[in-house]
Length: 252
Image (cartoon, rainbow, N blue to C red; front, side, top):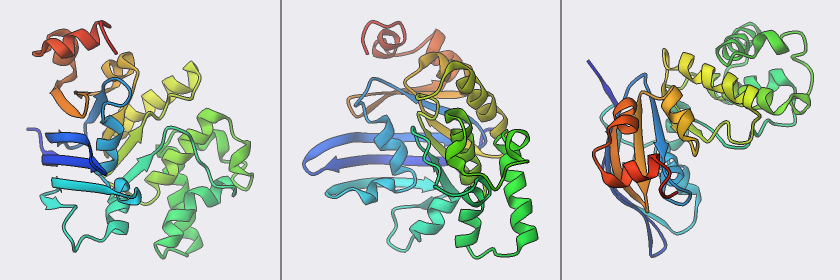
């Protein structure tokens, strides 16, 4: 039985007077990979950021509707946004490690959440790096600068940093778009492994990637959710002509 983790109801988002998301209602299942696809500027990254209130950081944004996570509306006035972002972690398109050691990058989140016991931190760092499939590559140089890692390693380190605070949901905004094919395939393998423990929502411009790694796919166009279904159905037998036209490359 599929359990919903995220449920948005009639979500509208405006940048000033410009409507960016138009009445989005979607139920995202727990411990699955859900991919958002669609042409540039269609609203998929804006929608992803609305799932942990990252759009709050942009001036002049207005949001209507509900985003329910575990049946709690994250836009209620009494929601602690810091706690929300611990529960709903985010990995960005461009890897952004801190100018600190590999170890300190991963320990940063637990430290600001009050964990200072060195044995416990060692354990958290090792577990997060193992979960991000990079432990074997870095275990002998944890004191080295994270900036010395390759692009693909930096992105996996950023994933480890997100995992270190033990989120339940991991949002990924085109996490492999800046990487070479080998690094991309490592990130894809990692995402498939991570869904055993986490609910993963990924924005990707790469339709082959969506078809390879996701369980469900949502197609966005001009701020609207056109179609959402199991990935196999979206790619082989979509209900909407617009979806079919996009998947077959007629536009986009």
